[in-house]
Image (tube, rainbow, N blue to C red):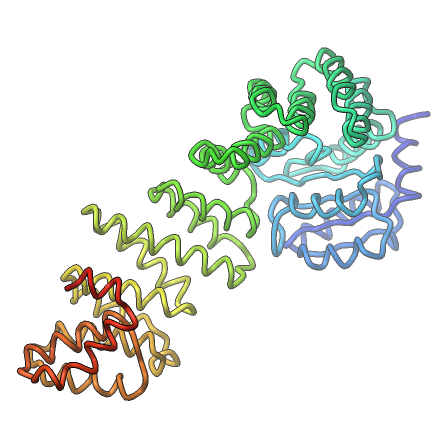
Length: 429
């Protein structure tokens, strides 16, 4: 059968999903697909990941053309959802629309996750040639892909040694068999042959140094073996080259903190700010990561980097006022009360009645005003509001001591400090 006829038949029996944030880009792709023979009624055009999810729940999608970045995620996120929904739909065609060379390299490295890619600007002819090639390969796959699929079936059945045998045959059928090495690595991993699995993933990366599946496989091995520094280097590479999703970014931030890679936090912050949707849980993670990294930098005499991280918190994490409170507390502790005072203005107006602002303001005031009586007055107002905080109580007790209060007058506050924060109080004594 003529290849153009193969595409025409495919479009007659499968619906098309077009995903792009830009309405004019969607309309152009829609018109192109109609010109290629798709019925207008079978083409669905949306701009976000959420809208795409709604479409794939009810429609028989056969071809997806998705931009690299879409509302709420990326084309990769969408393709993952489709693979999960249609695990046995071998003829599903997932086409990534890219706009630059780096994105094209990523599309090539995402072997099996992306069936093909279209580079902007495109023509009707280039899309036609791309889709003809993609659909034909799906309907009449190469011997290499057939052998890979054979190995995957054996792998799913738990026949790991047989799968490895078949995949080794596949390995010799392609000039750059990274995908075959990935599945060999999977089989070895499932056999608990960790070192052999690691070797297979690395062999795959020798053919394609940003091969997505091999990188993920290597990351999972290192995490299982609790080799966190090695795992971090791999996942950092994934974050650099592949569109980040919130779950993976949260994992990376946790791992960066765990391994002390604070110098990379700005890169992760920039990835965070590029996301269309920033869930509260991820905002909490990025705020915590930047605070810990900023504290480390401050205590290691890198004030400029520390303040960059603290400014990021003020800009993007102000809904979590605990971070601003922590930053101000840290600055006051390190005799940077003038800098701390500047961060007081970063609290939203509605947050200035909250405990975080009141404690932060008290700590700044305790350094700004030399009269212990004034500090005690503010402190007692917070005490009567039932606010309890180690730094607040410690500062209040110190002000009382400087103000000449008798021990019996200070005793209730000192006892509260000892009772609630015994470990900290002992260290500060």
